[in-house]
Length: 328
Image 1 (cartoon, rainbow, N blue to C red):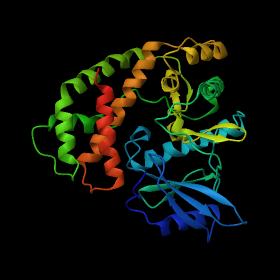
Image 2: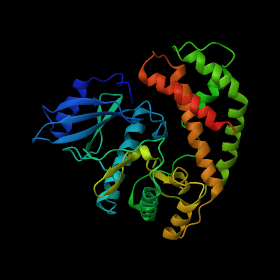
Image 3: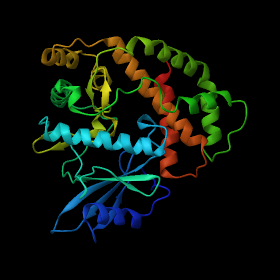
Image 4: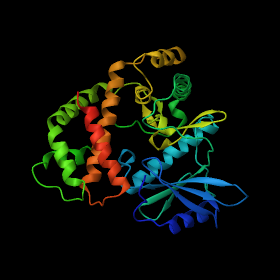
């Protein structure tokens, strides 16, 4: 997140850390990294002691629920699951949150935001658009195989829906292409870009819909949801997997599509480790769903009131890229 969150101040974040985790007097430095959450580096306590702090906007996590209380409950369930996977299932690559004094993994900060605290990781993160080298892909496949082997009953997680959380926003946008969009500087360029691609987008939405009945009863495992290079941290002990707010029960292809390459090596290795056959068609379903989910989010953001900021510029550039990727 390149822009700071609206509706919460750094002072409010500091107060949440002091009240929840006893981190009174710690300094905060905003970190404009990642996507989906806002981040700060907290320093204090013993010399060199640091924590990684996330702040989530409860209005911006539609896959967890449609109301703020539902999203907060879903976020807690996800973070609780990460703790279970690390401590009880023994998955050392899971970067789980540090519990607050109350035992909660996530605490509200006002009506709209929630705060979680994580260990500070010294290793460098990966880049979303830079594929992992083959040895690291193999290590990631082994990590996913271990994750998928954990009994789903060990965690309290829902089976994630197959539809798009912001599908309604995208459908509304497609229905209003004939009138100007006045949300901000990128609204009209976004309308023009989507208008040129509208027939293709509707075909892809239809293709997505045809898959939903087939996958509704598929066997599920515990999936991370976004095991791409941007959520990988390289540590001295190996790869670590961060950002577990998307953890949910789903077919294993939900994790595998972003790791598998055209060589087929990753899929073959996964089958060797797990005994599970990977369905190439389901991999393509999740690839398509990811792109359409991104599309709906970027369109939603650029139709809403906005200014020209690094964040909205990123959304505009990502919209261009996503539509190009969706084009057959």
